[in-house]
Amino acid sequence: MRILITGAAGFLGSNLCDRLISEGHDVVGMDNFVTGSEDNISHLFGNEQFTFYKHDVSNYIYVPGKLDAVMHFASPASPNPASPFAYFNLPIQTMKAGALGTHNTLGVAKHHNARFLLASTSEIYGDPYEHPQKETYAGNVDITGPRAVYDEAKRFAEALTLAYHRQHNVDTRIVRIFNTYGPRMDLEDGRALPNLLKQALLGEQLTVYGDGGQTRSFCYVDDLVDGIVKLLYSDEHMPVNIGNPVEMTILEFAEQINKVTANKGGIKYVDARSSRDPQRRQPDITRAREILKWEPMVYLEEGVNKTIPYFKKKLGLA
Image (tube, rainbow, N blue to C red; front, side, top):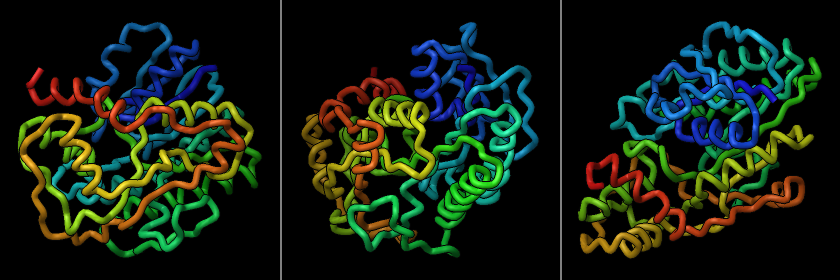
């Protein structure tokens, strides 16, 4: 296939480019580098299977030649208010990527009669009352808080995607992505793993917010990409959770990071975040298991060890 991937220079987009090219597909990458990094795709320049366009998906998209699939991954995704590239600090761009970007990419898919895959997120569940979260759960979201620009953009994107499927018969798919980590992730991402792993490699105390009782489920990027590719190849149109169902508290996770890195810095407790940080996050992956025959294979310790060399290089420790 010839596949357009928006957000191709991002953490997930670039890993997806590598996977699809390795399977023999031609990839057309698109990114405006607001949050993506050219370093993530520089190794693909000169590869005859890869073409790149620097472009903002909020504007009209034109790609010459036939396309067989469109995968929309373009969006700021960092929840870290301290990062200049967080969706907190790019609120309008975030909503435009989810609304106008989804509209434009769906239009491309419709024009080419191509299959379409939307990268959605577990954030649409908000701070959930249902646990673990199934795809049928409507969520508990704050539609006016600072996180809303990301949450609501993705919720709108899902609704628009299914509208195109029902109204125009576009061959759509929706993946709801849970916490993912691995090489090429942004060290300033603001999520638990980059924060804690960076501190551990620098020999610092690991910062835990509140009592550390909030939970997350961490999926290694190769597992996630495998699930996304299986969904692309499938005939499933309704949303599918892709993530690791093994839940742990942030405190347990911090202790594991210190163990894997042999960090003697210990743990430091600070006040809980005030941005309505979700307290529990765990995917129900029953549908992924049944429909895609997929589940994660990489254990946390193995995944962290695979991620450490990239972090060390970025930190100047390698």
